[in-house]
Image (tube, rainbow, N blue to C red; front, side):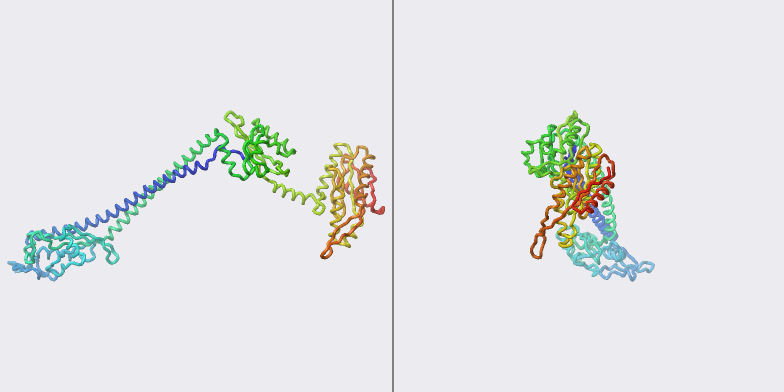
Length: 566
């Protein structure tokens, strides 16, 4: 019976693990949510910075235009890049100073467009002054700007959009131009009035540098959140291990005070080996299905019995001795190989393990046992033993077993003072049978000889096959008087001789059918008496063999005793 552990911790670990899995999932969701929020904020921040740059650029253009407008325009020296404005129809557009220098008037729109043109196409921020009704063709609006200005007329104050151009992302932002008093100087003839929307300023902001900075900031956020998550993971793991350990210790302490039922269920439901709980009075209190199957009894039948009733009588004494040591507290468990008797009478070989569960005061609460069926293993061991110590054909002990039995016989003779006898038997007329009918017929005869030799022999005596057609008989505990012992041995030899001399009938295969062969075979027997280790095993076998050959020389079918005193 397997030892009963103090507590089963599997369900404890799973509950604690489940709890911390949820905690870890919550932590992951929290950190992941924070990361997603910060990523979102970084994206908004990137757009906000780009919009701020665009607005700043537009405000700069507006301030510049207002400054020019507040001065009524500015006069500059005309050049190839700044020719007189052909679209400005004012009488004082071109003037000559008192020193003869030619100057041309730049109105606010013309000055602003020149400023915007000077930035260059490679600049990250560019602006464009436009109108739905431009005087200067360079100020013609594109489709997006036209749509924005139409929306301005509907009351929209600002239009922005992220666009892709040549594989690059850019922000376009546009604000309206409201007609002011200074604007009427140049645009009154177009029909504008104060407060009208004359056009707008659009700006292009390349997102490349902003997005690169955004990527860096997002990477920093991801890394920092990853580190925070790992720190949390380590902390959760540490708390999990601690709580699992504390729970295990607590459950273990509680389990030592718990009644047998909880422990019984944990182990008995496995069903791999026979298991039971018994009392100190050897009663079966609880048994599992496997034990019932092993012993052939129902649970109800077993609980009305004691385990000693089903223990093999030869094993009961050892088991009771160990059980007594367990009950007295000398040992806490024991394991032995023990035989039990099946309901049908069959002997079951088991490996028995017995332990006990004690109360706090040290007394036994109950005894738990496991029985592992090792019948197959024992059968294999017996088969190996049979091959090692027994003749395959006749199933009699072979020479190795004979040596062991002879040694026991010599020791017994020395201990008791009784004579023993060793008989060496050789079959006469055996070879002609083999020559005539083959070895199959010879094998059948040898098997029958073995049967006849063992029939009527005492359990303490040994019949062995020595080899070929030679057999050995060892007789134990004949008589203390040599003459009487010799007479007893001679009587046994004569019975053997008579038994082996009876005809043998053997059924042999004959083509598609069978035939019965009758054969007569006598025996030459050599006998040597022994007592008190006066000779070695080798000497006894040699002397018996010599006596057997004397019987052969005397005409066979004879009995001869070794004459020298042993």
